[in-house]
Length: 82
Image (cartoon, rainbow, N blue to C red):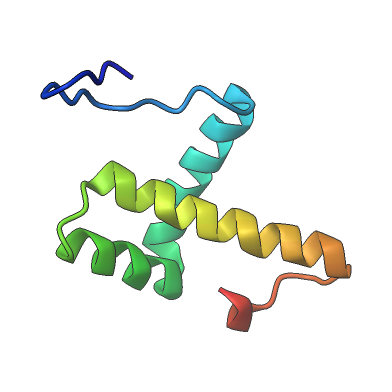
């Protein structure tokens, strides 16, 4: 994070578990090709001007939120939640 005054560098995610981030990233790459709801969300963000990687990470976060809710409530995957 090399930001100072007028200089704005690109940020990187360093927190969390790198291996889980990698697995989630690859899972989302597959998901946006096969799941229509995530595909539309990804395309909406890209059309809005977000970089493709940022849009992918946003979809990843949405999936993590859904998975956390499923674990908390003891539910199985429901297409309506996505």
